[in-house]
Length: 495
Ligand code: FRU
Image 1 (spheres, rainbow, N blue to C red):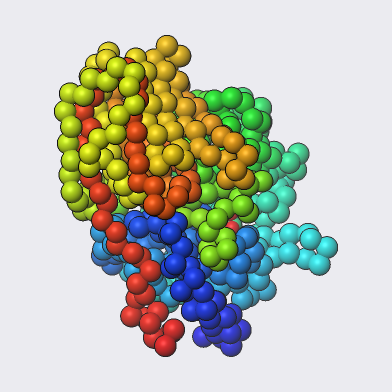
Image 2: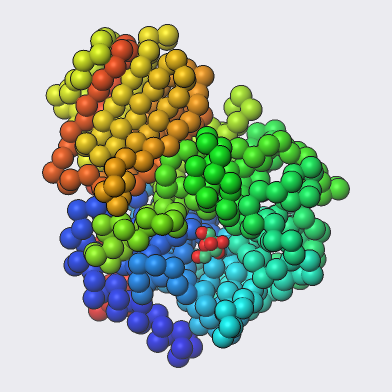
C-alpha cells in the first residue's frame, strides 16, 4: 500500500468512525437498500458475480454530502439481499485519477477481477483530463492499480468516461459515454484482445448517428447488452429538454433497443425510452449473473436544485442505490421485476381479497408500515380511479379516463407538492417497495417504474386507499437487515 493511498484511506475510515453514531441515528436510514456509511453516494459501479459473491461498488465521497473526488466503495453479498461492507476498493491517489476514480465496470478473466474506471484529473484552471484505467484483484477485495489504458481520442472532448466492458467471442469490448466536439452526447465503442491494448471502433449511437438529431450534451454511463432477441443500450444523457412525459428531469436515464451487429459494429435502434418515471433514478448499470438474469441497480438519487435540501444531510450522509431489479424484454419494452430473492425479507403477510371500494377513503388493519411490500391486483376492467396515500407524504393516483398514473410527493423544500406522470394502457397491478425514506413502484408487472425518495414523519405508518375499484391487497413487512454491520476486515481497519 503506498503511503499516500494509506493516508487517504485512513482519513476516509476516520470519517466513517467519527460520524458512525450520528449516521445510524438517522430515522431515514434505509433498511434493505445500500447506502454510504458516511458522505455522498452516486452511481453503482463494477457490478459482478465473482468467486461465489455478488459485488456492488459505488461512487463515494466520504468527506462530505456533495460531489467530490470519488472513491469506489464496495459491498459484497452471497444472495443480493444480505450485504457486507468491504474495504475501500479504489481511492483517488494517482496522477491519473487524483480528482476522482469515476464510474466504470468489472470483468472477470483467468480468475482475476478487473475494474475498468475513469481517472478524472482537473487542472488549475478547471480544465479536465480523462484516462480510462485498469485495476486488478485476485481476491475481489484488494485491488492493484495498473494505470491508464486509454486516452481521449480525437473528435471528442474530455467528457469521455464510464467504461462498460464485456467479452464477446474471445474479444473484449468497451463502450464509453462521450461528448463530441459540437458538445453533443454519444456512445463510443472500443475493442481489445487483452484489456490493456484498446483500438477505437467509433461512435455507435448519438447525435448525427442513425438519424438521431441530438439527445443531451453528454451521455453518461452507457451499457450495451443483449436482452432476449434485442440489444439494449442504456444511457444517462445530461440535459434532456424537459418534455412532459418524456423527460421530467434534466437528467433522466433510458434506453434504445435494436440490433447490434458485431460484424459491422452497427447498432440499428428505435427511439429513446425512459426507464423510470419517478423523481430519483439515474446512472443505472446491469450485469448478468450465473443464472443468465440481467440485473440492474440504479442510483436512487439525482443531482438537481433540491438535492442539497435533503434531511439526511445534517446526519452526514446522502443518497442510496435502488433495490436490485431483473430486466426482461416483453411486448416491445423493458420490464423491471423486483428480484425474486427479496422475498427472503418478507414477514407478517396480510391479505385482503375482493375489496370493492366506492369513492370512500379506507385504511385496512395490518396494512401500514415504513418498510413494507404491497401488491395490489385489480379485477379486470374494475379500476375506474384509484389513489393510495403513503404516510401523508406521497400519493399515487390512477385515472382510467386519461390512463395516467401520477406520483405526488411533498416538495423537499416544503414549498408544496411535486408530481411525475406516466401513461399506461389500463391498470392491472401495482407493486410497492417502501423503505424508511424511499418508494419503488412497479406498475403492471414492471412495464413502468417510478422511484422516489420521500421523508415522512418517522412515526407516521399510515397507508390510505381511495377510489372506485375492485382489488386484492397483500402486504408484507420487509425485515430489516441493517447493512451497517462492518465486515471483519473493516472491524480491523476501524479498531
Ligand atoms: C454520473 C456521473 C458519471 C461519473 C460519475 C462521477 O452520475 O457523473 O458520469 O463517472 O458520476 O461521480
